[in-house]
Image (cartoon, rainbow, N blue to C red):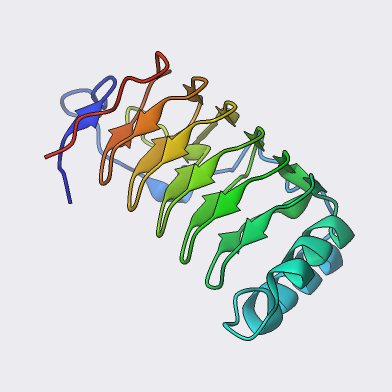
Length: 187
């Protein structure tokens, strides 16, 4: 896996300031559904949705049942994890490979003809490393038409991957990326 990164570096605490996780409040975070819906989704996710025996067509139906917008001819393989279906939009002709993980606390939009390869990691939230309370930072992610996020690549909060862009295997994308046909660094 590549250790190369595209985007800005991280910030740290100011000198002399210590992290104090007891001050964490989670302010501004909204799950978007009542607890019982969240619990039902996690039960379905972990017993049916991720299972090898669950047909791809059933995975699509389950996402829709829990509020996702999902287009036509979408292929979702086993071991795919989706945090909140109601904050997910998937276009037509999308492929999501085995073990992909979508942490969509804010929102993730996957346009038409996008491929997320095996174990791709899409995460629209993080913590503020310069805040002693480690509060949440969230920003939507958009994967534009025809883009490809290759195996074990990471796309982080606030990023738009441009139309036709290729995020190379193992790359970490922290800022908007992608002139068509241009790839993220690969080894």
